[in-house]
Figure: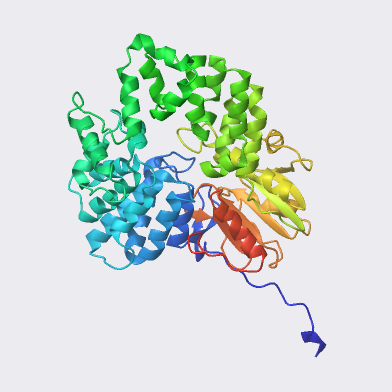
Length: 525
């Protein structure tokens, strides 16, 4: 009976992204694996900056694939789809994709006469988290489906309006550049004011007056920020710059809801050192990060710069901002002064704080092929290759024992030292041409306990379909997909896992699997 007295084999753990068994071709012509619809939509959603061109799909094609998947699953699997859309806007950090998805969810279910699952109204309200988003969703709906608004859209938007509209949000987001201003939204959805906020009725009336009768609109006395803003606006232009230099200048700007975007127009002059130093205390953390170059060009003092740096590098501020790591990398690459380098490096580290600390030996493969060099979005200069390298380096630094490798047509180790800066390690990565994931795995695997691959999965040289085919079945392989193309580079199954996005949710999945538990979708875990 001794044959039974052995260590148990590792459990056949599974993660939620699954393949169907059908063979597809990657965009590079390699043998790939088809994912089921839920998996395809999840990976596309977390990597999809709407209307964004990628190496292999133009923006329109990606958008069409996204909306088609949402529409099918909204009818066939509404619980799962509603969970995805709510999570996507919240922890997933994908704003536009979630708004588009909610609109398509509602339209598809109305067209099909579907009534089961989460209500259309609930799904619309769940994705509206910022005061300008009710107008954004209405803009998408009317541009796509016309001006007739179904009741669930009206009611979901109205629920969000009651939650999101207040005096400061009116000043920040109700601008002439918006297609749908606050007053337009109110006219379309007719929300009843929140009974718990007695001033909201007056706010709604003022928003309507600002839109339709701006010359006579009077801010309600019950909303202090609007009154303070009107007082600043009433100052003669010649007297406005003096406010910046007064001892209470910064407090007056903050009390009046004066944003940095609006300040130059109010001054009717340049944003010089005094202007920036007066508005910096009331700016959000990411607004600070985006304006570092402007601060340097205006010559803000070292004292003010030190306060900015302290906020940027504060772990609580980083957690509250819920920004992806690549936001800080982009700022680091474009900030002109070295005085911002260390706080941005700190912020990047804090944003990666939940990267799993892996025991044993780990092989980390980072895709640096040509298709990874496309920009993440039209508004960012950062590319997927650098985002992948930052994540791979962070994994290596936190692991007990890791080999970090870059790969393309060929592959090569990337050296690093314990405690070294992620940003310094990034400088050692290059551009390696094609995508030969299979060869990279074969060449560098030396009995590691696990393999992690950060890639867009568009392998060109994989004849047999699975880059990990040469590995023992017991060795877990984790793929981080950064692009969301249809075909994966390998089938899913026991010990073969695919994740999408660089979020805390993906990191937690690894922790669950390493602890011997199956991993569910992030919103169901």
